[in-house]
Amino acid sequence: MKHSRPGLKELGITAEMLNACVLPVYPEATRLVDAGQDMFGRSQQMTAPTRDAWLAMVEAATSMQIELQLVSAYRSVEYQCNVIRSKLDAGRTIEEILRVNALPGHSEHHTGRAVDLSSQDCAPLTEAFETTSAFAWLTKHAARFGFELSYPRGNPMGIKYEPWHWAHQD
Image 1 (cartoon, rainbow, N blue to C red):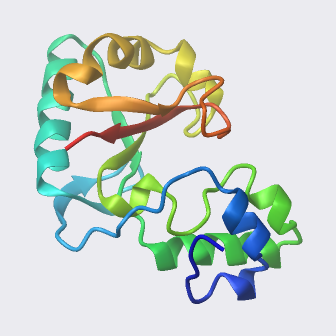
Image 2 (image 1 turned 90 degrees about the horizontal axis):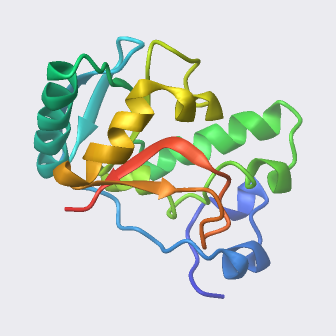
């Protein structure tokens, strides 16, 4: 087995699932700063370089009449375990859940560098985001601020296409 973390076995995550995972294990951020509120009014945190790049990117987008809405940012490994636990409690299988959720410890969200984005033109966390002017703007300009689309179509990680998920490369 590549690695072992407490709490995964109770979620039904097997050694085989861990070994089959092609996503890297990411260290959990220990230094986070306030990044304001997301579109739901929840306080969000990021690493300082990510927050600075995020704010600069939002300002640049706004100057071009593009609204970037923050859906979520930092999520702890414990939070990710709780998301999986709640889906299991709702009757979903671990295999089904892991088709759309990264294994805890393998998500960019707990690095403090990932942001899930949306716009007023679509429901959050849907592929419809790729049809928005916000996505078109990000595709053209996000790299200038150090952000990359983590899971494009056909990505080598085998993760479902997520046009809303961008990570700062600090």
